[in-house]
Length: 362
Image (tube, rainbow, N blue to C red; front, side, top):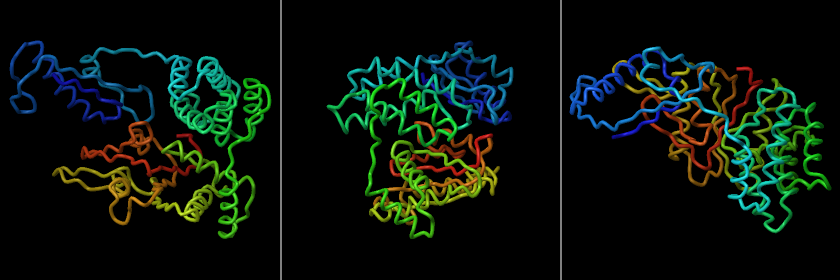
């Protein structure tokens, strides 16, 4: 029989959950009764007794529903434990080609646990498994650039350069000191592309802005993050230059003959249904703004072409639990937008999502 896994099950509204519990109970009753066929949603269907259903959920999140008691009774709960990051880290380092995987994994996990304890508690800091995974991919890319060089500086460079853009000014000295303590000796120089930095300076001046060193470093840091991550938050108060950072990068990419197309939406200016789409009572589907933009980019419709090396969806507006929940599958490794109409829009390799926000309080 078919086994189904319903991921993030408690994102479904309470009304739908009660219907699901009734439907699934009819399946379980049929299995207990050892019948060959049973009535399911007014339709007589054949039963394969080895059918199985699994659900995954994170309890206690904002925007999530508490499962009704009658639905809880149909499932056996399994508690999960936090995985041992050191073993995951060691195996991933080996798969990326590192010989000294064990000592490097120990340093990696030690740094992240110390950062968690010693740095200030910022909403955008993430020292968990997802952050580890993306950084190890970055370290692997650096290793392949210099396959014969010492592995300690390679990992040190990845840990330092990839994390620095998100570290606050007050936490920066502590973070750099931790790096120095774990990787003693001369610190490796960061990889720089002077030609691209010069190009960014010219673009910034042409846009009527000051080519400040800090601003240019943010533009360069943004392109480096977008090379390894498909989703990126640009955080800062109003007027700090968030929009100008990514717009300057767009111009710089055009200058080096890399076509970049973008669409900007304020998710707070419209309802969640207008953002993603809605199904009417007569089962008519009405597309939402994000659905249209992502479908056009993914399937290269309405002006988007394969030659566009960069396609960005820019969401400029505060986050709240109601609309960001549906972005979960886009931002994680699934890279798919799942709509109520059952349509799945994949995030292609040229697509990126930028969220321009003031803070991450929600």
